[in-house]
Length: 225
Ligand code: CTP
Ligand code: MG
Image (tube, rainbow, N blue to C red):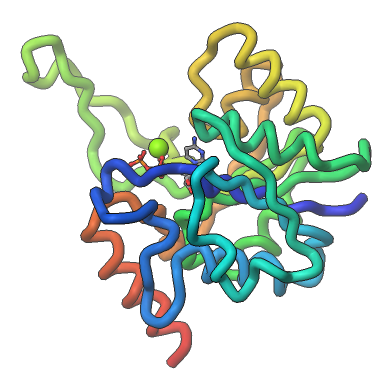
């Protein structure tokens, strides 16, 4: 089945606090979004890349990838899940699979995509990383209520891989139900799916705060070296 990459890139980057949405900040010599799109566009299994942009995006057109023949742009929505849903709606092939990846994760490697595509089972899959630190549940007064066993805990990363049509329906129903959906897997979990957890590389960080820019710069520079 054909594989489409879906890239939510319609956020404003509130926590970054920069003068523009964080996906348009420079990392070494290119924007974050340009790094992300070029990793996806150069993967041999990915048929097309659909990017969801903010309504007042004044930056995308100046990206090198903007005129790529296998890139489609759509308008994003209010929440990340809305942007993903609107991008999925542009896929006409009902048998397609969607690999959803945050614009804000520019350090993605092809070998992470390859490991995800080889996922076990038939319920879709996400990249994830095991929790390293001891986890505490806070009580109402801010003191520790108890320690949460970390053995079964993972951080959810992207890409996340699902049949495009099933994911689209799950997002529509999740929104109708007023559910809080912060990743694709949570929409599928509501529908009774049990997606696989595939261990991802630790350098696939999401750029959220200013400190993350320096870390991503180091990861990208060490790759190019
Ligand atoms: N995103 C999106 N549409 C939205 C909100 C977010 O496409 N309405 C995208 C962002 O552009 C980003 C990804 O979803 O690539 C992950 O979201 P996040 O890291 O939260 O980015 P922002 O929402 O831009 O940042 P913040 O929450 O700090 O405002
Ligand atoms: Mg956000």
